[in-house]
Length: 97
Image (cartoon, rainbow, N blue to C red; front, side, top):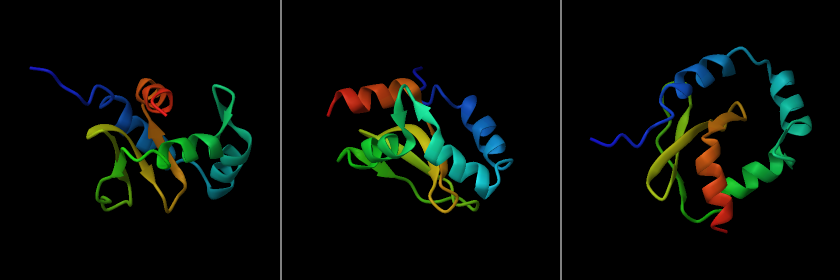
């Protein structure tokens, strides 16, 4: 049996860690952190400008699964401006554009 949510071990940890960030920390990360040399704004725009990216329904905390071509690749909480995307899935997503 093939399990497609291979990042399931990381997801609960990333959600737990996200609760430790203050709004100031989140804003600082948004403006000053990068992923492989790309600003977080560029990463966000790359993900959500892709026509094959969809969002699931929010859970009780406001976290929404992010799907690429129907595969669950991460999560985002748009109210807190925080989330997590599988690096390999992100690389596939941007190489397809």
